[in-house]
Length: 376
RNA sequence: GGGCAGUUACCAAAGUGGCCAACUGGGGCUGACUGUAACUCAGCUGUCUUUCGACUUCGGAGGUUCGAAUCCUUCACUGCCCA
Image (cartoon, rainbow, N blue to C red):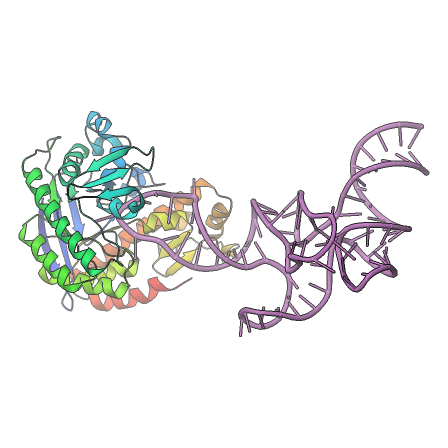
């Protein structure tokens, strides 16, 4: 994997670049749709590629390990072949599940023991195991196994957790270097900065992560309960330290506003379930603001779903029709909303990229922020 | 014509003397959702009020009672059965 910066914004830390993987090029800044269980929920891969124009998608180690399982993925020849996606894939390590499934896991120095949410069976995830599974999945970019601490963690817990994440990282890197890709193309390993909302911890973590000299670096443990301003502050602190010539990936973020703020602070890659999950729950993100499609006000509004939208669903369907589909609990509603939201997110980062090249990112961002935050 | 059962908020349906503005579903309105255990979750859904609370309700009218959605009388309507 290689990364090349193609343009820097004049008034901010925003940059535009190009990541090259064996499955193709990723133009940054980029948003990566989340396809946890070998599926971007409610969206065909055809639409993902042709209409939404996704350049890279995610998969999840924990979920894919439970179903369909490693054996099936290996027999399929890896996740790309299994799901029919020939562009880049990034897999999360299961670190987020340490946070989101905190009720049914136990953390030790060795790793985390999960009780499966599917059948209750116990599974030990370690730094090494996460590498092995991600080798079997065959993602282009694989993530270190970390503990994603909640934004409300106290200092001592955050410090101990961060230090353990660092030890896990060294074990993971060693194991990564001692193992080979399984399907004939290269994989690269991204470490993850932790440290919760504590500036000194974030600095220590960023310095440690930078010293590992990986191809790219991730910022984790944000947008997990801390105030948004704190998140922005932590991004600034960390990006001061993370190498400029490596892609920076802000994990799990976020709203359109979060993404623009992240780009301005020098982040290159984002992923988030919001466009798909919120879409399925009836919320549309548009360049003009946020719409709750279940609201009465759309009942007889036959105007296009999004007159400024770039996806075919934006002109093919009306607001009134999509509202009807949601109210009627029709599956098509989930598809249309998910396609629209993902297309919007990809459009948004694409526009950001253009304005970085043009050198007027910050002024463009200011106007866009006001628009996307409106409630329609 | 006779007998029986029933009539509760937008719909369905509990409640059979005070703890009832009235259980529960559905529907409706609004909100939440950030490396996906999520087509999920939460609040509201008689009127007025920010809250406390006040007021008007359980087919209509009248009555019994300190007190009625609940008991009595009567009228109206609906369903089933017998002629």
